[in-house]
Length: 308
Image: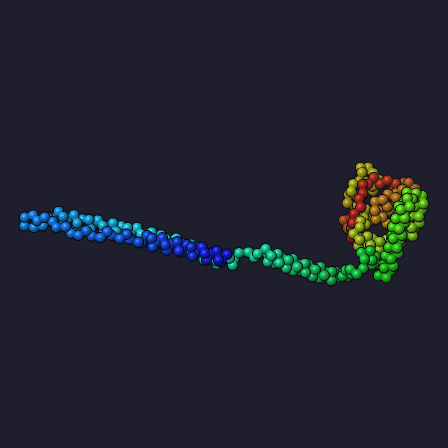
């Protein structure tokens, strides 16, 4: 870019100088003619010849003065244009320092800015966790172990439960692989052997209890609440005062964490007997009485922070 600007400046300056020199070059006047003898008339020379020569010289001077004035004006215009070009090129050279950095430098600056933002976000998260007395996340442990520990289990107990659960999961994989290879996947034999493995599955809920299991589900990011989305008109739920947005925690003596668990509980016991239904409404725990059987609700699974 510097070389291009220098060439442009040199070319403009040379062109301007050549033009000015061409303008100021005055054409050479023809050599004066030798004086011719004028005929004598009476007592003196002819006055007509003298007047003609003087008039030609005066006209030539006037022509030269007019041409010089034009060339002087043209030279001034050329100088003005040259000054404008020089000023423009100088402004371009000085303005390069204000241009944005090249793409690579811009990307580097952006990456550094993102890194600083991430570091600040991490520091803020750690400060918030410290303020809330939350332990730092131990990424050396699996997600399941962290969830079990959040549910209240000892780390060693959590590691043991994970080991047993992983062992049974691998056994199911091997069983399915064998049944597929030997072509008895959809047979009573496969169903019996799979049921035997399921019977050995670790019951996380039994290990943790209801409150711990609630925290376990929440730590895994799974749903742990049954939310009322609609109450049918004149239904048992409507008569009991249930409303849209209520969270159902317990049906009778059983904690419920999913809609199918609630349905299963309504189908047990004696139809029509009154059952306590524990709900959360706008952060407050309430109890209502409903008859056992269909409630007349439309419910959905959702996630909510476990109650302390």
